Length: 214
Image (cartoon, rainbow, N blue to C red; front, side):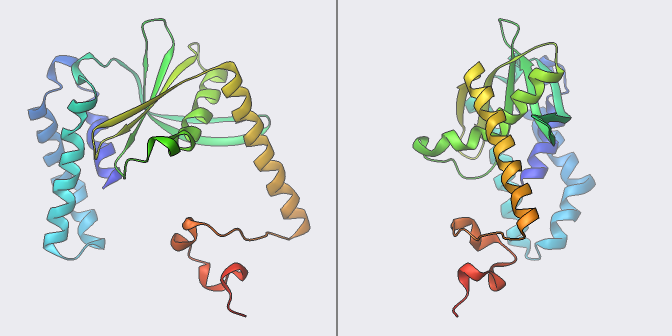
């Protein structure tokens, strides 16, 4: 569902501002579904009622865009922008959903989310991916990132965070620190397991020492 919504919004924000209407979004959603996503989703979701549910949930996400912003006033400078560079010697790759220029000449980096809206007390960690993008953009772009946006389309909620020199430095330090820890474990061959809620989505849980009953 997330990929489908992203594809629709990519096409939508390539339209001239005056053409970014709800009707245009509905047309693009139908076109994307009929040309590609209907068949793709049918491969993994067999029941017709579930497919219909996904399609309606996707549309509600797109429709909720108008609760967050006025699409006709957004001026994208980049859409689905690919990044390939390094921070502190760590090679990174990513895709920015959208970035645009603010009134002061900075860059606003926006990320679409179709999942559950987090509690505001836990939202800071959700910005980490965008912080990395901001640090990479500041290396490769003539413009500097000034603000980050998380657009939670399911509920029509937007979270923002200002980009500062301190936040960028902390981000680079974290990336370098994580890479150093990975390298250390590759040398030692010891990868200690750490239990978390993410374990429920891990394909190796059944053979993980942390979950072994022995």
